[in-house]
Length: 261
Ligand SMILES: [Fe+2]
Image (cartoon, protein in one colour):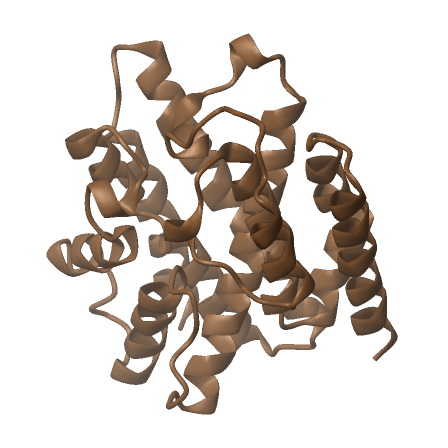
């Protein structure tokens, strides 16, 4: 990827996002959240890429993947007024669709275009397929790490706000009652990555996000997690129970263990 292509992608993303303007400030706030998320994921992926010593071209591929991974969120919100994929459309698929429709990646060589498209396509899957080539796998893992650390930031900031200022779109319309079923904690304590569809309340959603640590791939990502303590902040907004404490200890010791490797 040469300088011209790289600069074009950055400019295209900015211009594309600018075409989605809402009159209602609440709707605009939803789009602003996704715009901020996009550029924070770009920052995170640069840091992770540099931390693992990626060379320049691979770092550019990772950056462009981050830049475009959620581009489908804008038409998704415009059309469906939700970020809930099951109630609308798979936003990763929408991202690819938009990139293809506007021929954005067409100047890249085929392998680079395919890696970026596949990494975007798999970024929101519960698991990465087992049959990917090493380069594609690397970029899938990078975008998934960078995306998760920033979603954790968005969530922990959201729950630190007064309730009246919280944007309900962020919590995907889940029930506001504070219940966390024991089985949800037990899934986390078994080291399982959970599926959204099994959740009933916002607080269970927080526990699901705590379980994301088991799906983090790179040491620099664990460093970011420890530094920001978004998981700790998220946990602090849950009802204080023995199971919560057990879950927090379990997650923290997992992060520490991975940092010692
Ligand atoms: Fe996404």
